[in-house]
Length: 333
Image (tube, rainbow, N blue to C red):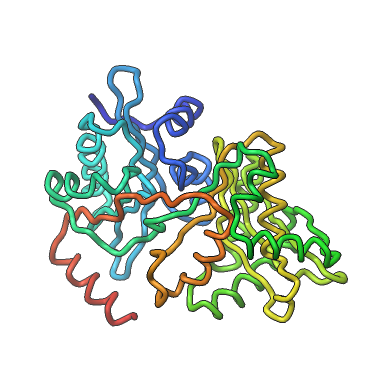
């Protein structure tokens, strides 16, 4: 088995569709790497091959640190055939890359279910670290008809959708830069209310510019009397539509626009042949103190199931600088 740069993008994407968990597979696509490069990052897209058969994929992004240091990040990856030993091969290839780049460590989030945690910790000797991408996500099977989907929702969610439908809200989609700015302002306000972070406006503009070339992205916007009161950023990859980020104006919360935005996006996704709707990260259902608890209750109200991944790990190459990195992170909090 050998490590090579991936040339055949169709082969890579078919592999992702066949072997990845539902949630977050787009983060291992070549298209996501193209976006990262447009935003100024250095990326590599590598595969583990047995002759010409692809056995595993890793999109690796270089993250710069002070003092000329860096680390490597593999979001929601590597994606491999589980139980085949391919993960060790890919991690070995990434380690060689890290040595050339002078990287302190690799942060990775393998696309395994949570039951593989013990195996990874014991066999690879890696350090469990704070999640970057959510460890738990909420997904909905949208192959059912609309009546079945509505009946599986919590009563409050169903009521709020019907309430929003009566409020003369205009729901539209867009890929325009001016609407990205509107979305960004709403997302920032919502993030402040919930104590979470957002990316920069330029990050979202670059994302829209890059992913729209592959029809992978859309903004859903809800307008009331000419004013945008809520907006969702959606990603399309494989058979899954993913809700990436969203925001709403708290002054208009009585309109229940976020409920209708998701419902319209779900209906459109069904019409376009998608089978899964990914609401993104959720906290533990019983953790009412978590900053995501309110958002998580909102997502669960639509019905569906929770997908738990194995988590996030650091494979450390330079222990001295890794300790300095960890110390600096503590002081930044």
